Amino acid sequence: MATDDDNFFDAIIVGTGLTESVLAAALSKAKYKVAHIDPNSYYGGNEASLSQDELLKWGEEVSRGRHPLFSAYSGSSETVPFSRQYSICLRPSVIPALGPLITGLIASGVSKYSGFKLLDSVSIYSPDGTIKPVPGSKEAVFNNKDISLIEKRRLMRFLTFAASDFEGKTEIQGKEDMPFREFLRTVFSLSENTVAVIVYSLAHCVSTQDRTLPSLLRLRGYVHSIGRYGPSPFLVGHYGGIGDISQGFCRASAVAGGVYVLGRPLASTAFHPGVSTEDSKQESFFEVKLDDFPEVLRSRIFVASREYAPQDVPVPPYSVPSPPSDSSAFPIARVARCIAIVDSPLKFQAGTPASTEEEDGREAGPIDSGLLVIPPGTLSGGSQDTAATVFVNGENSLSTPKGRWIVYIALPLTSMSPEDTPESILRPYLEAVLQPIGQSEDTEIKPLSTSFFFENWCPVEKSPVAEVGGNPRYFLTPPLLYSAFPDLPDVATRNAEATFQVAVKSLRAIKEESPQDDEELDFWPPVPVEENSDDEDP
Image 1: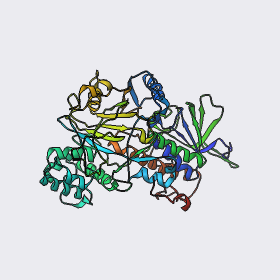
Image 2 (image 1 turned 90 degrees about the horizontal axis):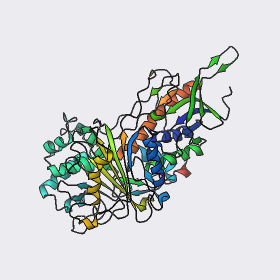
Image 3 (image 1 turned 90 degrees about the vertical axis):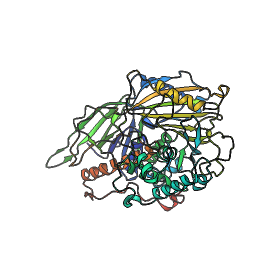
Image 4 (image 1 turned 135 degrees about the vertical axis):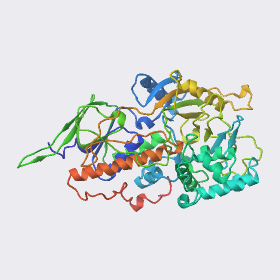
């Protein structure tokens, strides 16, 4: 078999989630021949951005077991007007202004395929049922009338500590694994209200038991992100965010020679060991046949996300280890998710995170994109263990028609009863967001459409794992598990780089290229000067 055949590739990748899409772009730009396959008819995999009518079809597929990461879908069955003008992300997130994804967007040139805006605001739900803005600057802290002067000084001392190289400082020695809430109370003598703001709205901790060191590392990254592109540390991607960014990386792969096949499930996957004789040497290769697709695809290595991993391949897969992360390692059983579409603006606060007029008594203004964090134990009927994140996205992110907003709610669950459903768990949160305390029933917002579902923790059974040594040919990408709400894009990018490193080392060994040692490989090749003129602009 000729390896220069048009249907012979260095790598076949199955799944176009963010991890796999970043990987495909990196391999293609490194001059490897890539075929990228997705059984779905759209890009993005489990992070896809769908129109509202596509979301309803996706929900029907979830009910039939078509998407094993998700389950228990319920909600509206009718399309809304202008349903094709929505871009609804299945696993939404904001993007830290400093981090692996932003670096990859710039280094790969994918930033020119996507658009972004700053997150307008971050707010916190208080135990009395009110919603309060989270100060986003020193000026906003000192102008906040809810914080005493002594508390402001303690808070500023902590923020200065959190932004520094604190690893060797006495404040944290021996306290790295202490619950972050306890650390803030005992070391910096902060009040319970201030602790809640720091833990859940600044560090975006998942639970009451999140450890101190990972929380501080995450918070430092967010603090350093402030000012890179504006007053907010977070960006919001256009057209649904993560799903559109995944498609941007796929486009970059295609420009560099990648071949794409969507909407064709795997029919069969086989592995053919190489045969060597005195006169010739035939490489080992994978052979992939797709449903209703005439061509047979062959490759040196095979990479798949876990839910698309074929079970009939005689080669044991190498499960790429998840890279170290600053995100919570708190055990989560499932994530309850809600997606609601509304035609009235939500009013959490006035001004931007850096505004010095947030506490001047003005009526809260409508937001286009914002985060609302609901800490554990603050909502009647809500979770006592984990924080819920509400993400509002409107027309300025090009994700909705004019005068419409998407309300996302995500609640990690540590345990649940058999009778619990996503809707029964999240309905109190949705009602609290749509009719905050102090507003009359006449102003309650009625959703045009709602969708509820579970994101499952382990979508597939563990597969046999190949030995770490040698040169694996079959790779499973690390699972993209729920972490701190803003960290999903960076975790996916780290997963992609970890897979890239081991895949390229195997390809170099298989193709007898040098070097074959343990040196770190460049994830992205240097960008030509003319392509890199706006390297700080995502």
